[in-house]
Image (cartoon, rainbow, N blue to C red):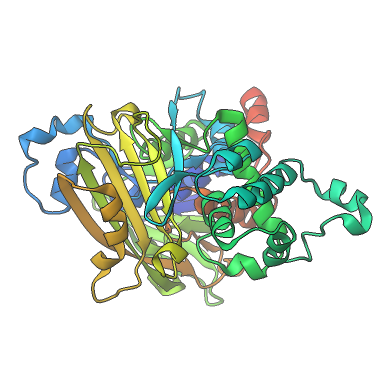
Length: 460
């Protein structure tokens, strides 16, 4: 050990996926001295964006056929996810990297839900409820009343109503939906396509969280005329932007530099990482370590498996919207398919700068329920997409950390779920930041740091 170069840091981050790069950027802006290592030679990890040649190489498919167009015009996400327009991750982006790096985002033009094999626009206002083909006349009236109430909901206003107000922290979603006389199909699309739950567990839980999730969707639509946005040139732009942000505030990045060993003291607390730079042994000591699950196989547990299909087509998905459009998200609720989990479909086009004009990139994702033949879990999505020019199907194991890192000082992110939105990842980012920093993220901190420098990292 005596001949090794040793350096001290506040935090070491392993992997350059979106969650890790956002955390690296946020910690750097809060005065942490950060070392960021990645075994790969590119940024993004599982959230990287690939051109067509890279995609074919990754799946051992040889050379892309000429009729698909130029390779560099493709920017295909391995794990594509959209951002909720009024969501936490967009707030972080605005406060940190959007203006600094002139990042450009495009709205996802439509959000759909599938019912009886038809694809219908997700209603989220009283007017949309009356226009929707998802519901009959009387159900439309009940849904309109619910959406109007939801748009105006506040906990204080409900408390002021006394016995007539709804205490959402006590009543369940089933109780709330029953109060508005909502039918099962309406409950399904509100829970899965508006509140974005991945299963039906919320129905027996307090209604407050579901209503706030649904309000976030409604606020996104009312503010932007669309619930989602997507970065031009793919989600792979996001990790790189936060990497640059970290570097501006003193972060050190090293690609193609896997850790040789992550070391802990006898009590199980993290102490240092051994790694090499051009064959030279180095030691990096830090107060804590963060990273994705692939770097901590002994500290995570498997929670399931996702199957995804990346498809290239030359036609848009046929929906209830007659006017041509390039991008959309479609959620097929579990009840529609008699499954335990939803199926998610994301369509992107040249408007999003992910493929040449005349082509579409469509990604289908869901939890694996047929372990013998995971491809069968995608069939409902593929039938909605129609004929494809190319398909790339793959499965990914999902993991979560076995503890919160309070004692080990090893803070590990969750795997990316099957959903085509970043809401769970955003929640994971803010949760890890709070555990690491000891306080919730303050969205004004960076702006203050830009004026007077980043705040010092808190003492151990």
